[in-house]
Length: 158
Image 1: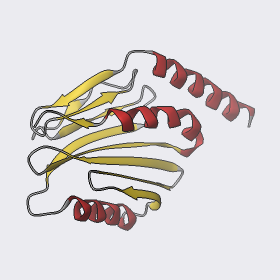
Image 2: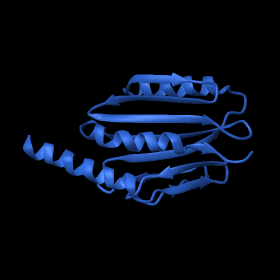
Image 3: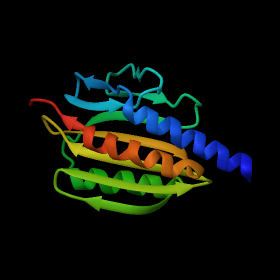
Image 4: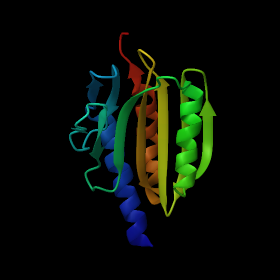
């Protein structure tokens, strides 16, 4: 128990340091969105199709995904409902959800893990998303990181 508490304290201190350190910004040319990447996370590996990419925490236990998609003939609200449904079908207990006309967030947990997803309406009938997944034991340490990420996801000039 003491080892676990010490590990949480060390992670909290490193997360606080990460908040004070320089974040980097990822810009996606295909879907015209931007998001900040937490310090210490690996360099974002962009997908071959150019829609986004992934990065991981220094210890490899947290995964950050970012992507864009064309809404085509789908309304933003329908896209969100579909993705929340997919998370539920994948066994995630979606415990929080808030939808607005131009943004949405939802989060949940499964098997000792937490996820947080944010989506925004983007340019040219597109949407941008990020998802951060991490261990429930370090949730408090990740709260300020999630808050910063949420504020940083934004659309570029359309």
